[in-house]
Length: 254
Image (cartoon, rainbow, N blue to C red; front, top):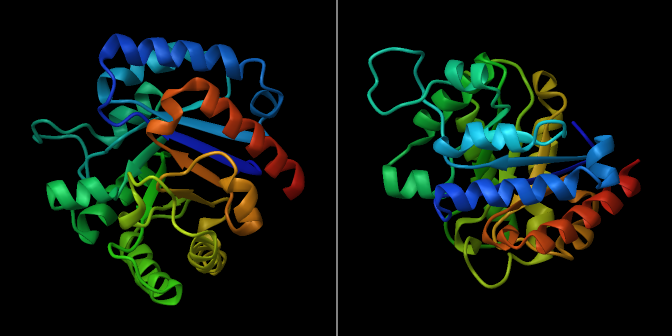
């Protein structure tokens, strides 16, 4: 895994042509961004399913990884409306988001479902972006315990391979400010320790999402490997600012 990781999920905010335009403009920026071009900073972009193929075209010739916002827990078969990890991998998808708080809350996805999706992605060489985090604001030590328990449940039975763990405290998603720095550091370090205890997860990363923006990565220091951005990255100048910060972060980690 590169020394810094930045991800963007477009969720369902953009229309089809708007998403294509955004990808094209980001691709123009990253082609000349030294840290992204060199691979010191890994950038992944997660559009809607319909946006995956145009995004792959837009980012041809760059190191940007294209992801999916979901993945079926099952292998190919009679599962109407689902998209398998096998098909995603064949299309060129490199990462898949699993366990996001909205999927858990709105669609009733349990840890068992998340674990099945995580395993499916890994079976087909796709790196899961595993979203974990406590639902209610609490002391950092309690949040760490809850998040680590969720983390282990979501990886139960998963084959070997790296994961990108996105720590997203549910109570901080969509708010004006991220969780307090000290809180994030405590939980992120606990996640990192848990990963280090798993030899079959070598090459994994811990990133923070939840109202993340510029300046936060610098404040978090070596507790995290990067950030997971949402609406903030709709403005490409904002995304570029975070990529610059990630480049400095990667240099500090060298």
